[in-house]
Length: 562
Image (cartoon, rainbow, N blue to C red; front, side, top):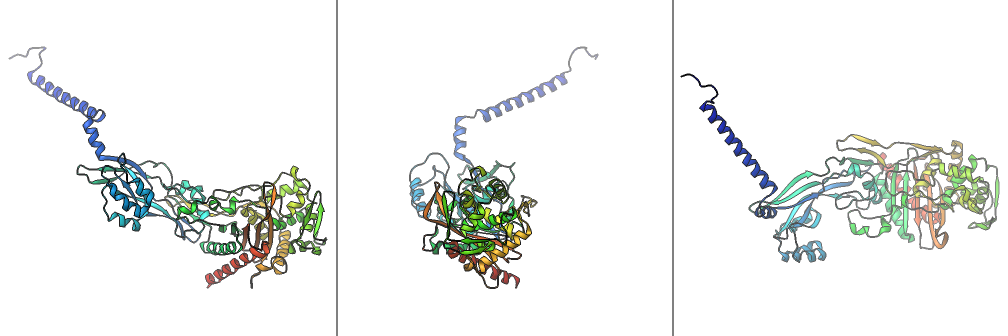
């Protein structure tokens, strides 16, 4: 039979109809899927809300902080956090919550609550949490988090610092290096399945693009730190001092081996954070007048400027009138050579030398020594001190500065300035971070020796070290003498000023020294603030603390050698 042109075969027509039907069905399914997902029935919404609780960020493992010998100082450990679903919570269980977490928690959960999710307590140590978990209280659930823990409690607390409840650094190294240590939180989805069983799911990581969970090694030696803290506290308690500082550095490199600030806090006990004064790192965050510990700096500057000669002699009558005031000594020292001004800590002789200073040149030299500016040590909270501009060096100012008054320094600034005498004339940048590693273990920062300024000639430093050795041997620092250890040092006692007025009975007593005196390995500064006992002079109360620390450190070195 011949074909008729223009007509579609019956088989082809049926094939196209079938495909059109399939396409129509798929289109209807797609439309229905969009409708269900974007415009769901209210009954479905209600049911899903009964399953879906909350999307909550929970902390992960923060990076470790360790000392120079890799002893852990801050670590993250597993913990348990408790939360409640009000729809299944029995308020009678609040009494048991109170027994574990206190009356405030008990009161909160003794009343009906709205919503589906409420934290009870976060980051409870696993061993302490287990007792409550075993009670199986209806509506009380747990999730896993990581808790920041400090194995040594108070040790180096101001250096290490602390974090908030979400492990975000708030002070010290924890804050300054938060971008390295912080591990972004994971988002957990809290759900219930159709049978009411709890599902704790890990969702998206909200901070996945951030860098964190690295580790930090400090220059601190925890053994030296422990000795300094132990002896500093003994000295502060025995003298009734309100605050104290102990800093030990390596003058050859600028490494900080110990930085103690009294009173300290227990990093594992947030109740100890309530006193704001305890949170201050006195080593870098407190400024004070250094008193006679500043005299070696001024005498070094005077010798560099050829304003003082070794052959000079001074006669101390116990006081001297300068401009509109009087500079006084504890007693009349009589005839003294230049070295004797340090050995006997003579104010009148130093004031005489101070009057010879050119304000602009002396100011420039003091800035070279690091005063009036931050050292940029790698922890938060450093002050820059107070050094008046040369235009303000009027009246008694030059004489006052020569005896360590009329300016304010941080303990770290002073110990680094004395370190320049100990090492032969270089002001070094202090550093407390030995190395920083990223999450992959690669070193991204290494602390190393850095010379900020060359401030003194070697010959001046040698002369000064000998004068400071005699200060300990026969002068005001005799209480710091240690058998079989050659020490150099300087005492200091300064009144504390408030609002421009010196306060009667308020002093900062200090001693700074180094050993061995001819080629120092250590420089140590001790400051006791506002002692309330009968004794107040640095040679009486700070020098014995210095001595006790040197004795313990010497024993530590002997043990390590054996």
